Length: 505
Ligand code: FAD
Image (cartoon, rainbow, N blue to C red; front, side):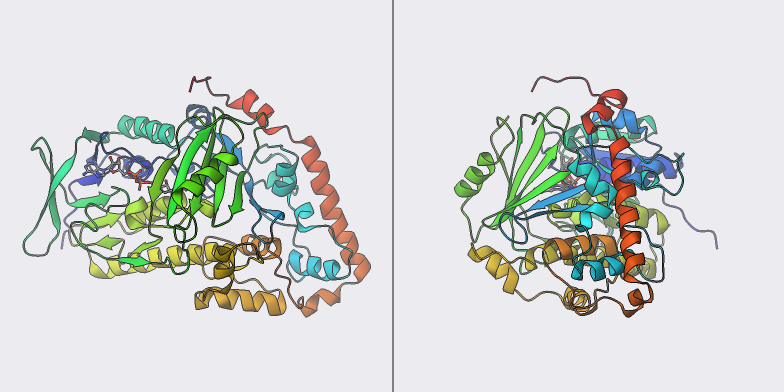
């Protein structure tokens, strides 16, 4: 039987999610499916997602993005990891650097040998075995040098910081160039088919009616189609991630352009710092049960690099996810599908992974419910695994200075997370389930950075002599030290390859 193909795709919303979806679909579907994007300048975008993780390279490759142009056009900078300040105990800091730690050589993972030597007082701090952590510390950056094989210089994992408004504008140019038709206007009514509740059309304030077969809901927190129309339902995770508000404010740049995001824990939340070429982005994510909006604003403004360039902008959110990200002929992408706070910069990644899933499961007019169910299962898996990783940061604190942190340390946590913590504590073993986003190395850095020390290392470590292990660790450390020494300063790299035009703010 011939399959009846989707005739047209309608994307509702032109924030990061809308334009990322439009650009990817226009590229992959090669213009064979008409794509229409509707956005309302009056409603505007959230516009605060400015830090990414290395997986974005895959998205960039699919859309054929020119990196230098993209960084220039978005006032971007490069990111080698996230520095966490005050998360274990007050005054402590550690980094979650991208890419590998050490180099695997023998039967078991590098970190197992490191655990043994650390117990013996013969290992350097974990960061000494990571090129991205050491480069961040030295404020240096370069992309991987593929001409040198078997060197840490060939294995530098990195992501970007960028101005969210400029990013949406940049992607819009690409998407429109690839045939996406943009419509400016506010949707005031949604029509559904009587028989099955599928969305048939959206109607704009000016009366224009836009029909579609597949609707992609990128309308932000409100979920215009997925929630306001289809009433899909939302799972609230505030009992595990209790922060529910944020204040965002840009400020003047610091003299040094650092190649990493910083997250500083405060009394009842934390503050992000995202360095861009033209300004620094900042925000305070906090829990309204423990701190007032005024105090949160005061704390934010007291911890800026330079002069604030605007008044702090308030945002409210409920951490959690939509019960189904795909319902009938509506797929939710971005904030309409759920929200996890930006502690590990994962929202843009979730947009990207949902787009990849949508391409994998691209429907015909039949909208096979088995496929839709599998899509929803995968979305849930990704959301829940990232959720666990974020809870880990809160739960694993030893702060005694505030009721908020003590509540986080004592709260019940999901079984999936408790299992990972127990396994690591008892044996040093790190567990990555299927293709969950964060690798063993990510979990290791946060657990170690927040003072969770395993009771044991794996027995096969003792197959090697102490001297051999010591030499092995030292050789890795020295190679990394040497490699960082040849990397250029972050700002020098930008100056030479992707300097943005100056702007007056
Ligand atoms: P929005 O930006 O809200 O866009 C919604 C779109 O829908 C707009 O174009 C709007 O005009 C349109 N729309 C809505 N209703 C209508 C209507 N009736 N008619 C027509 N159009 C309509 N992510 C990261 O990866 N890294 C970060 O560092 C990061 N930091 C964040 C910090 C905070 C405090 C928050 C809240 C989020 C952060 N995020 C981060 C998440 C990131 O901002 C979002 O994932 C991203 O911006 C996507 O938003 P969106 O496109 O889904 O929604």
